[in-house]
Length: 160
Image (cartoon, rainbow, N blue to C red; front, top):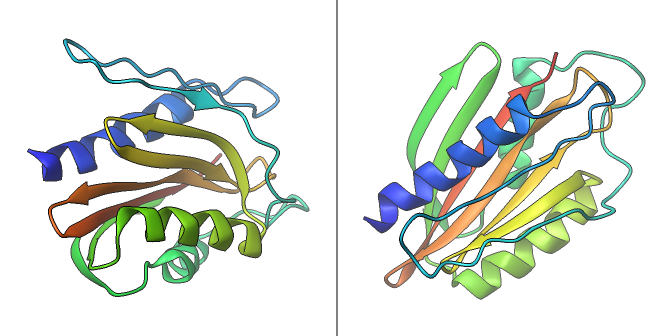
């Protein structure tokens, strides 16, 4: 069940962000949890300067580079789905949830990727990320504990 939730939560967030963008490219996200005591919080954060402005269009090669840059430490890839304008990859890491949360807070900042928002639901954490161009890359990075491991799901797509 945790595995399913680890895949569905980021997929739902990606769809919410993709479908609720206004003309300026600002995204809003809402989260609900049916029949549970989950707390969901979507917060807008400043984030970095982005990585790909200047009006150039992103490509699938750029998406693959972001995935390589964001691959968690001590992890093995357990699932991958690719389409022409996006990719979803799930990893299983032996690192703790807290260690990976700190890792991604630092890694996202180091790469200059803009954080549009964050989401915390039932012990999982997601970053809604993107670059600052209209045709750039955006998506989510989600982490969720799974026994002695942590599941990391990265969903990235190209805007348009």
